[in-house]
Image (cartoon, rainbow, N blue to C red):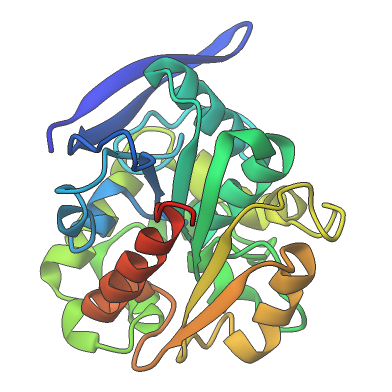
Length: 290
C-alpha cells in the first residue's frame, strides 16, 4: 500500500493534508472497507489486518487529521471533525456506502458519522470503541486511549510524554501480548508525536473531553444498520462487562464478541482471532439475501 494524500478544506479558511492508502479491487457484491485508527494511532496499526482482506474487498485506510502522517493544525479536534473527514473522503473517492472498521476513537468517529449519515454506512464494525465510559475513568491512565485525561496536562508534560520510553509505558497496558510492544511499535507511535502541531491533537481529549464523547447522541441512535462490537476481554480501561451494555443502548442491534487474551488494541494484540471474527462478520454482511 502506497501513501496518497488529499488537501481537505474543512473550514472556509482552514485546510490540511490528509494521508490515506488503498488496496484491493473488490467486486460488485462487496462493499468497500474504511479502516479508522484509534487515538495516537495511524494506518500502520492495521498492518496485521488489512492484507488479509485485500483479496476480496476494496480497502481504504486514512490517518485522521492530527494523527499519523496527516497534518496537525491548531484546530478544535472532535469526533464531529473526524466524522466530517470521513464524509469528505467518501466524496473524494465517490463512495456511496462503506463498511467502517474502527478502533477506539476511530470507532467512536464512525458511530458519530453513522448517526448523522446513516444512509452512507453499510455496517459498523467497532473494535473496543471509546466515547462511552461509564464509571471507568481514571484520569491520566486513560489519556492514551483518547478518553478523559487530566486537565493539568500541558505542553511541558506533552514534551515529557513524546519519547520512546513514555510511549512504551503508555502502550503496555493496551496489550495482553507484551511481545507485540516492541521497539518497532514504540517507534511507530513515537514519530507522529514529534511532528509540528502534534500537541494540539494529542492534548485535545484532555482539554475538551466532551468533544470526544457520544453521551449527547440520542439512544438508540439514528443508525439502524448492521453493527458489531468486538472487544478484548482484558481491556482494563474499557472493561467489556461495563461498557458493552452502554453501546448496546446506543446500537441495540449490535452483536458483541469477546476475544480472550486481548486488551484494548485487540486488532493488533490478537490479530489472528480478530481477523477470523472480522472475516465471519464480513461474509455475513455481503452474503446474498435468500
